[in-house]
Amino acid sequence: MSPRAAWRLERLGYGPVYDYAAGKVDWMAAGLPTVRADASARRALDAADRTPPTCSPDETVGGVTDNRPTTAVVVVNAEGVVLGRFRAGMAATADPATPVEDVMEPGPATVRAHEPLAPLLQRMAERNVDEIIVSTPEGHLLGVVRREP
Image 1 (cartoon, rainbow, N blue to C red):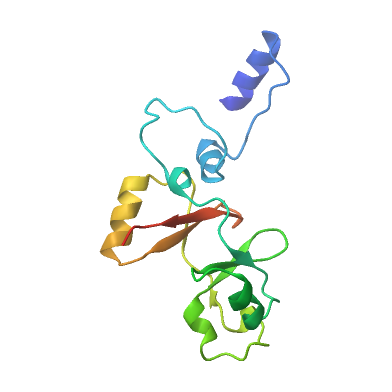
Image 2: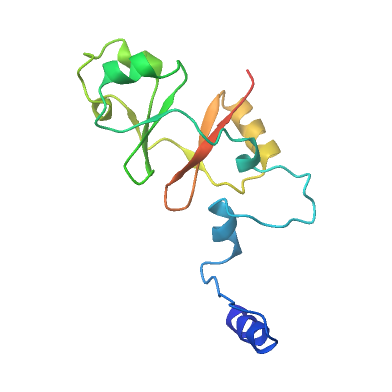
């Protein structure tokens, strides 16, 4: 129905009008802006650290541990796609010259931006998970939600 609605809006003088074929859920999952009837219901992206520590897979373990905080570091490629996670404890047994890619946790769990926050935090608590990565459906990093211990 959206193509018809777009055509009708253009006929009424609005424009330019675009038909987002991927749909509303994809739009929300990508963290794009929406208007909600209940704006008080928080989502994952609302609580996420939008600038978490990151590194490339080619950086060395020594370079990451010397220049990043003690929290986990999200490993991303040049386009910002999440490839893995590097935790401080991973450096203990690795040579400082080792690429992060060789010791990172590959393919960490992620959630979408529109995930309701309260149930997400509940699941994290039940599973003893301190943080979770928020990404777009294409895997681009949007942020990290951290749970209070």
